[in-house]
Every structure is written in structure tokens, then in C-alpha cells.
Image (cartoon, rainbow, N blue to C red; front, side):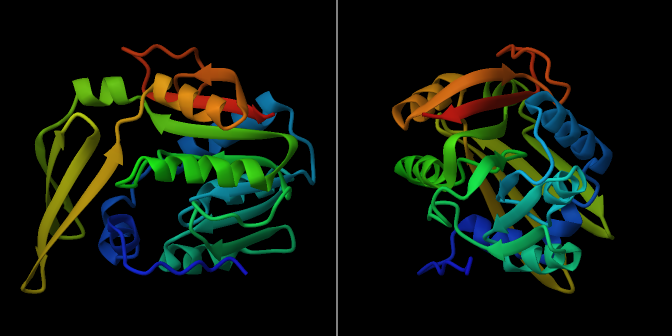
Length: 249
């Protein structure tokens, strides 16, 4: 039902499906993610059995918390390996599937859509951002809510770590970063079992004005803007995150 095939693999489809990606990022703060989702649910006053879509859910850590808080959740991601892991947690009110966020899933089906942990802006073509927002608008019910949690690009660019090495599971990951005026690039190189590997993450450095233009032009109204997982006000220079809450018009 949720499978959408691509003609050729894009960088995120290839990299996110590797065991190395999951190894490199395995120490992400699960408690922080759980507390953030709990704060969101309480702030939005979501009630039991409301329908939610976790768009670009990865292995489903946010979806699982949303479901534990009483929501009926569908989590989708383009990574087949991530969804295979997520499916181990399925139950009657928590389902997972492979899906491309640029495509419509099911019209007018969800009261709230979550797009969390900078799971936006991966594409080469900026018009793909429009496709994502339009598909979300289509999938939301009338007056439905959209939550986007993105990096604060302004601060990320100012504090860019140009090069570092991380040792994880006996593998040295050499990581370099750059900003070209549009995207933040993270080049990841390493060797394992006599083979050399190189992957590049590429995320559009979208700022508040970009999201405002994108959402408003696609019939959303922004109602709240936060700057961190504790839902403090957004400050372009100081905030760690850019978290937007919008309603479908």
C-alpha cells in the first residue's frame, strides 16, 4: 500500500539503507526525542485515537512514542531497512510502510502530520519541497496540523565543523562539511573489511523565511514557531532548532 518505487536511487535512499548509517548515528538521544514528542502532544492538546502520520519516520522512534501517548499512527520512510526495523513494533494502532514523501498516501486521512529531526530538504530540486508540502496538505483533514522540526540553518552554518573523525564500532568515519550557499554537505569516508566507502549527505539550508513562503503559498497558516525541543521561542542566531506548527487552510 505504501510502496513508491524510484527510477534511480538518490543519495538519501542509498545511504539511509546501509548498516553504516545506522551505526554512525546509533547514539542519538532517545530520551530527548521522547520528551520532545511528549511536549508536542501536550502542547497541541492531542487526544486519544487521533490519526497521525510520521513522515520520514526512520526506525520509528517518534512514531512509537506518539502511539504510546494514545494516537493512531502510520510511520513512513523511503528506507526499506529502517521500515523493516520499525515493523517489529507494529500493533493495531501503529503501522509502518515504505513511501516517498513527495507522493500522496491517502487523501484527508490524518489529523496531524509530523516531519521531525531535519527530515526535509534532501532534494536537488527545490520544487520537490513544493511536492512534499502539497502532498501533506492533501493527506491532512480539514484544519489538520503540520509539525516540521528542522535544524536552525543560520546557527548550523555559523558553527559548521569543517572536519572531524568519529570512531564507531572500530570504524573511523572521516567527516568533512561545507556550505555552498544553498546546501550543507557532509562527506563521510571510511574503510571496512578492506573496502573504501564514501557517502555524501546534502540538506538544503532552509531558513524561516523559506518555510514561511513555502507553507503560506501552499495554503498553510503558521501558528507557532519554536527554537528548541523545550518549545522555547525561536531566535535565528541562538536557537538549535526551527520548529514550525501550521494548520491546513
